[in-house]
Every structure is written in structure tokens, then in C-alpha cells.
Image (cartoon, rainbow, N blue to C red; front, side, top):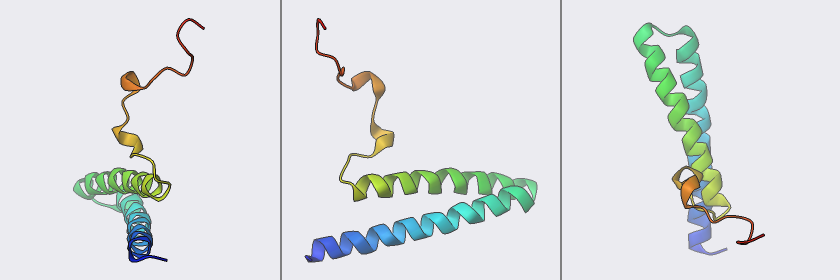
Length: 81
């Protein structure tokens, strides 16, 4: 395995691991935190969920899904069909 593949694997492992931990911390703060900590918890949940999606998109070699715009996608059917 090349250095690039090794670094990508370690980076994705760290990104997914940190995102899962942040997701759980966010859920705990949303459930049991003070009112201002609930806002922090909600932010943690949203950001960590998006980071997990980004990690899987990078793992599979696709462009990040949150950068796709539905109005710029090419139609699946050929014209006139």
C-alpha cells in the first residue's frame, strides 16, 4: 500500500471516529444540557452527521453529496424519449 493510501485510510478513520463521538456528545447535550448547551448539541449533531457523509463520499471516491445541486444534474432519460 502506498503512503497516499495509508494516509487516506488513517485520515478517514480519524474523521469517522471523531464524528461518531461528536454525534453522541451532541445528542447527550441536546437531551440533558442547559438551554444554551442544547444549541451547541444541535450544532454538533448537524456538523458531525455532515462529516460522516463527507468521509464516506471521500472513501468511495465520489464528489461530496452536499455539493450536488439537483438543477445541475443531467437527466437520466435521453432527450425525446
